[in-house]
Image 1 (cartoon, helix red, strand yellow):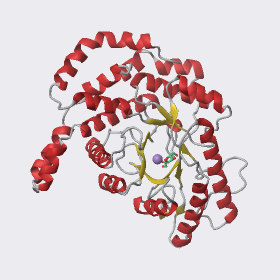
Image 2 (image 1 turned 90 degrees about the vertical axis):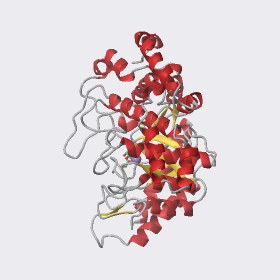
Image 3 (image 1 turned 180 degrees about the horizontal axis):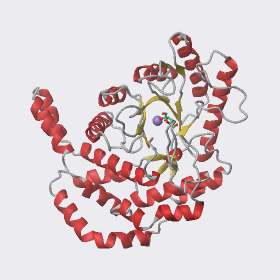
Image 4 (image 1 turned 135 degrees about the vertical axis):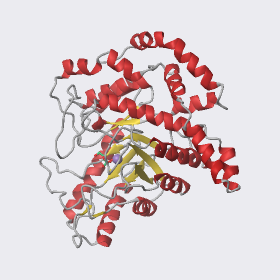
Amino acid sequence: MRIEKSAIDHHNQPLLTDHMHRWDSLATTLAHPESVIQKLADFQVAIPSWALGTGGTRFGRFGSGGEPRSLEEKIDDVGLLHALSRTAGAISLHIPWDIPSDPQGIRARAAELGLRFDAMNSNTFQDQPRQAFSYKFGSLQNEDSRIRRQAIAHNLEVIEAGVSLGSKALTVWLSDGSCFPGQLNFRKAFQHTLDGLREIYQSLPTDWKMFVEYKPFEPNFYSTTVGDWGQSLLYVTKLGPQAYSLVDLGHHLPNTNIEQIVALLLMEGRLGGFHFNDSKYGDDDLTVGSIKPYQLFLIFNELVEGMDTRSMHHGNDLAWMIDASHNVKDPLEDLLQSLEAIQIAYAQALIVDRTQLAAAQQANDVSAAQEVLQNAFRSDLRPMVAEVRRRQGGALQPMGLYRAQKVRERLIQERGSTTTSTGL
Ligand code: PSV
Ligand code: MN
């Protein structure tokens, strides 16, 4: 299903006077509202194909019905999100869940909805039917060279699929590691993994990037072979200039200072991609901004400062993606909430008074520095984010329109109540 422009206009009309009143009064308090608006409009976040279905835990899964049954339907769902929010202009695929059998058709369908293909994700963390060798004891790290070869070959196929869709990046997340002390020789595991990544890297088209995503736990719980940003940075530094680290917010031990990691990776020119989600305990994959919105703001604060220092384009020079999905919400509503949380945190980071902050830091004026950050974080920028959407043809209240249009009910009618989308 699609949401027509007329439905969006019809939804916006009765909300407009109140919205303009709130936006106008906010705009007068901001130093450069139009430049912030432009940056927000340019900032598009990719939706991963696997977040369109209900996520599960190892204890079960409670589907919401109407889930996409094919790659085409996944693209349609991202099209819905983009039509409502105008900020979800890309989709990130996972192979083999989303093998494009008709790349031309898929590309055309995505283009019609204003979507491009973000980073392609390989999967050597699960065994697939008819696969020759098992990844039970790892993929690129494996002692068995045949298993390593199989994992390398899979990544090359993913690049090929990505080329056919116009993607420009490969994300490699390995679940490789060990569950018990003594299981693995850490140095050998690292070396095998590096050798495998090198072969994959050598097959990258020259205009592609490769992202090496780290994670300290799950499904391995004693060691992981790309366990943290230090290990990721080691790999990408050894690989070459097309390789970058990828930060997933859920892939850190509790209370890790992620904003500092981001600042240093950016300083080294090695931050390539970002996976947004939120968590309380581990890789909980909760809605962005639902648990720690201040942390999200502080991360964006470093991203903006670091990208500006390197004259990077905020929208284009890093790969932004939501990596969240769980059991209890309608996945599309969850994604709409995540998209809004990202835009709010980004907007708040854009209005930080950097001159005042630098002066406070220079003078060791700790209280003043805190005031500057809190002034931005405590500003309610929702009218600004709504205004960006309105100007781009989106909905003033995406969730409200989603519900008024009975999108989930219509998807269930169209696709059935028991469909299960591929993913985790
Ligand atoms: C791993 O937890 C991860 O965050 C990686 O990005 C995967 O590609 C994704 O989840 C989905 O499996
Ligand atoms: Mn991730």
